[in-house]
Length: 309
Image (cartoon, rainbow, N blue to C red; front, side, top):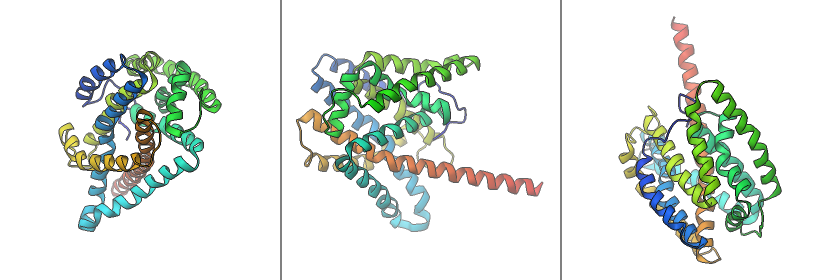
């Protein structure tokens, strides 16, 4: 959901609590084995990250409740969950292509939401959680990707390495343009994220980014949006309204757990991130559809105003 400024800002509204919770846990987890680090990271993603996507149900309620009454929930949930199911099947039928699609979509999704616009800023910002760990921690990143896909990977796929190297000049160009435009402060957050993904294990850094930056940024945009989810008036309302759908998501994950092989940390990562990827598809499509619809409505309103004048 774009922000009007089109520039990356400081930490979004609602970041303080996730930061106060996540930072001590993630810091302490660094003293544990990789299994302990993974368990701590994924638990935080579930508790602090998943609820921001659960607010899609509030958008669906706002879209359909007046027209469909109590039938609004199945009317919204059925196509949404159908897309989720298709992605989950794709993970098992074609894990490598699904991974590629997920990472490419993630770059655009993270970037467009965190930078507030598409184009070069979105590619530069969205590439940080993917490209930096690939370049700085290739073996550890491969371990996470192997856990997600159930493929044998000792290093990241070659296409991902090439793409990550290509991201470097893209990010540099955006940084240069940003400095020339007089917005040096805009680079503070991406610089901090690059440092985090350089210094921390990949899954730990991703969790820090996801729960402290990405999820609060999406929630803040929804709070500030005038029409998408009127009941999401503040951070407290966002948390309260996301509880039911978050609980349903956890139940889906619990069901997937029973049919997923592997030792506990690997299963935990696989189930959580595969489900996160599955939820990302309808989440992105809903946002894209709403953005296009709102743009069309604004254009029609502008034409009508011009005609009256």
